[in-house]
Structures are given as C-alpha cells and as structure tokens.
Image 1 (cartoon, rainbow, N blue to C red):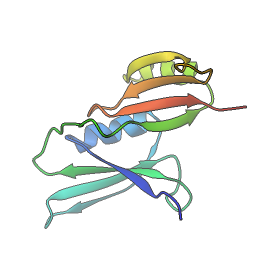
Image 2: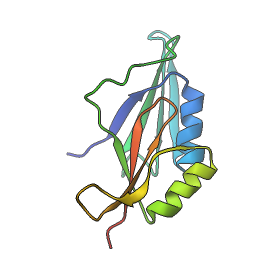
Image 3: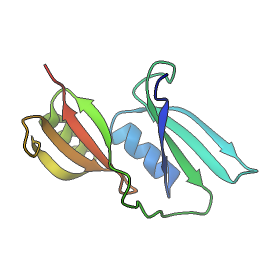
Image 4: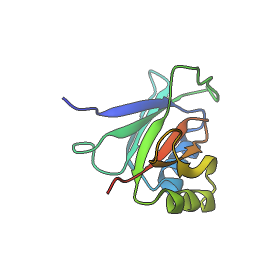
Length: 128
C-alpha cells in the first residue's frame, strides 16, 4: 500500500494550479473536467503519480470559497534549505506565515507558507 494523493478543494482552479506550479515548483500532471458532475480535477506534484504522492485539486463549478475547518493540519514538503526555499516562495508571490527557524521544542528547521485558499504548507529541512 502507499498514499496516492491528498485532495484539496479550491475556489479558483487556475489560481491554485499557478501557485503549486509557479510558486512551489510542482508540475501539472493531469487535468480533467467532469461536466455531468460539474467539477474539474487537476493533479499536481513533483513527479509521476506512479512513483510519487501528489495533490488533487478539486474545483466544484460555481463554488469560490470553502471554510477550512479545524481538523485539517497541513501538507509537508521536504526542502534542501528552508531559508532559501522560503525566499524563493516569497519572491514568487507566496505568503510565508511562519518564518524559517527551529520548530517549537526541537531543532528541525521549518517554515510555513499558505496556498491561495488558505491551506497551510510546512517546509521541512532535509535531514542530513
């Protein structure tokens, strides 16, 4: 068994695709409209779905906002250097919500960024 994807609902599909591809450097792997169901799915990630876990962006036609709720935590992305990654994301228009630094009660370097719909994404420094 393996994790295939995490699904996030988005209020503006193109805005989200632009964020995940242009700001976080993922690739748009596939996209398909489902007219009978009135929704579109787009899958983004850092590599082919056969070998990598990806994010499914779901756009329900006509819905432009979702309440995030309190149960969802965050998506985590490993990066070589959290400080450099945060600066690249900031330079590309990304919103840093927690500046890079050691995690609470630990030494692992982390930062947080927010996607256009408000979903938190944790950047975690690669362990050497």
